[in-house]
Length: 115
DNA sequence: GCTGTGACTCCTT
DNA sequence: AAAGGAGCCACAG
Image (cartoon, rainbow, N blue to C red; front, side, top):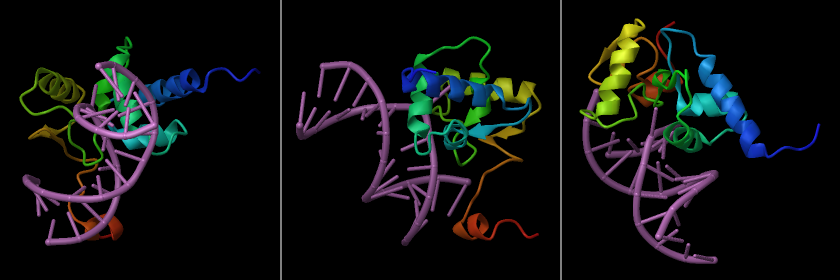
């Protein structure tokens, strides 16, 4: 096919990746960007969510790499996201999502949890 | 074209 | 877990 504007295509891939997140699960911005074939464009993904208010898009399932909500605590959007996540069965505490990520130290990151 | 800004990420302390 | 600093990409002024 013709070489349609890459931006639009990438946008579609990002949205697809976000919609692919299972209910009750979360994914990081970098994770989404990687799945969309755009390594290192986590910020771009964030800007997409900020600008394009897609309908039916589970934007609340997208969190930061450390498992925390990207919005500042106390913000309206922050509470909304936390509320939606809890409604889907995600354990959210202190603006942080537990049970998925939340790496703490380099040791745990490289060596991971005791297998 | 340089500067500032942001729903980011990684490393070090 | 939290805080500081550097790197990164896209966009507005």
